[in-house]
Image: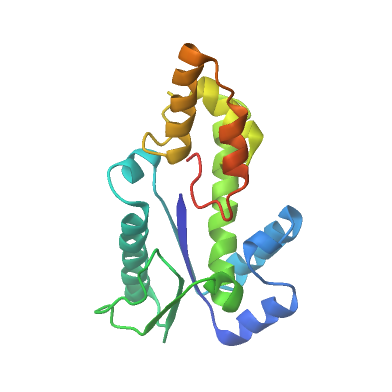
Length: 206
């Protein structure tokens, strides 16, 4: 998992909006890469933190994301001035106090606030580059999201690899189905279909 913070002047941010800046999930890979480069060029400050699978397994992903967000804000305030922070919703958290700067936390903020869109693009690009590196070592596991049949198929044979979160619900289902297969011959496809039917995709391989 990658969490990013971006600090940018409003004028520069508005220029990027005119060039198509929006939530990373709405962009093609080519457009996202173009905006990624522009953000790095025009931002006053950019920082990214990686959270590894074993770190997530030790705690709750929302709690970890909250702590990482606080760290990124604290570090940024030491290096650059900014007036307000916008954050996409972290579980049920809707406020963070004591940071020395007003913080607005809203669901789907990456669609509402361009600066959050910029951070989502940075985090997404870092994730995609990391995924490409992992595939060189562990083979093609698809997108890493539970909605991807290729990811599910890879997990069925490689769930013991260190890049897989041990407490991932998707992994638990695969192990459960594998156990049933050895006893009663059940089919893995039903689990994969249930995952593909879920909205969102907050859980991922790494």
